Amino acid sequence: MILVIPLISHLLISLVVLSLPNLTRREILFGVIVPSGFRSSLDGRRVIRRFRSAVAIPILAGLIAITQRDAFSWVFVASLATVIAGSVAFVLLHRRVKAFAVQPPTIRVIELSIQAERLPWFLWLGVVPLLLLAGAAVYLRANWDSIPIRFPVHWDINGNPNRWANRSFRGVYAPLLFAAEMAVWFLAFALAIWYGSRQSETLRKPMVGFCVAVQWALALTMTGVALGPLLHLPIALIAVGGMPVIFVGVIYLIKKSKDPRAAMDPTPNECWKGGMIYYNPDDAALFVGRRDGIGLTANMGNPWSWVMLGSLPVLIAIGFLVMR
Amino acid sequence: MAGAPRIRIDLNSPIPATRQIADGLRVELVEGRLKPGSDLPSVRRIAMELGVHFNTVAEAYRVLASEGWLDLRHGRGAAVLERTAPATATRNEVADYRQRLRELISQMRAGGVSTAKIAAELRALAEGLNR
Image (tube, rainbow over all chains, first blue to last red; front, top):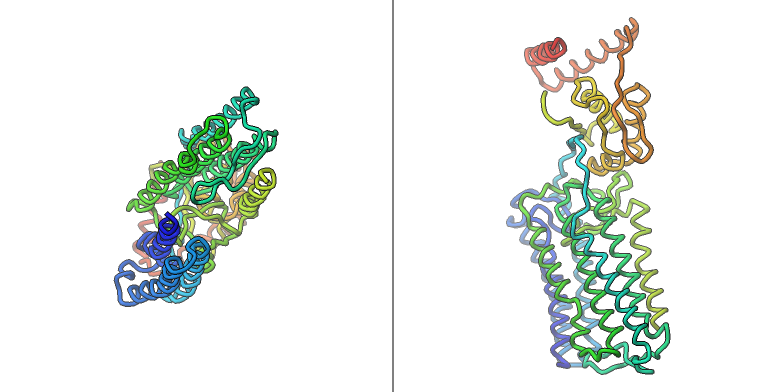
């Protein structure tokens, strides 16, 4: 158990980093639109090989460190080194592949017939986590006297409690408040994706669904944490929480991202910084398809993207301050 | 000619996007595919789908509103107005349009379109005017 969890975490992260060139559609390689067939050409195969060689070093070094030394101390360093190596190699190879770039079509045609855009039905499922959290709060209030004076709120990797809280408003309700603010943020984020991305964006709808899945996962986990002292829920159940929901969401996103009917990425190559960051003040879209993986990324040329993304760490910091 | 009204722009064209959008919309308005009373999508939606700035589309809408084609509604796009064409264009205006037509035809010829093809296109357009 001591070795398996860090090893699996590192291997999973390594797998994601190694598959970066394959996560995007075939016409995009290292954030650049390339001619069809480039991937299987000599140059294409060479850059992919270079990328894999660059990330193989920290992956192997990390594996050795995890197995030979203190696994828990080294898993974070090893995974971080792998991610950094992957990012640096991606940016360097982005520059190299630019020499083979083809521009996306500059002609845009849109129909003027107004189709009232109805929000996807599953967005309303995003209200359920808020109701769940509210329900848990009411239940805790109703059973206030049954809550232990002191109870665990955080556990180490072996399932042993390592942080405790007292029966106070803050101690009891903090996990629910934190989950509520995050659930509201993800709901707002889902709406921003819906109204701030092009209708032709393949992953627009799936990403809205994914945000709802994250909301559910957060609410389930935090409700488990909050009700744990009262219902004596097993720690494994709390830890697993809403993970299956996220897992299903990721699989769905991967499946949708490979849709062969998807329109070609219309964003200009020169607006992609390092192939990862989209900066185009002249594009009204708030979110566009990623070129370094699956999903959508914010248009950093739009000030609202900064507001949206900047608010997340602020909310997390507030949540942690409340929960401490 | 039939079909849903649409606009087409080329981001690589030397013609500013604002003018391309205004010109494209005017064609749909003049040819009656956008009928009085119908709603146009919001500035935000058009800008997003075309991949241009909000102001680019807003300016095109303002141009058409100043020509009497559109009624702009704050935050809700625009509605097509019943517009009566001016009784007669002035001699200078006609000369200006002729000059623009000549420029366009020259551009087509320079781009390799044959004179026979240009003549056929003009004939087809002229026939459309009589319908």
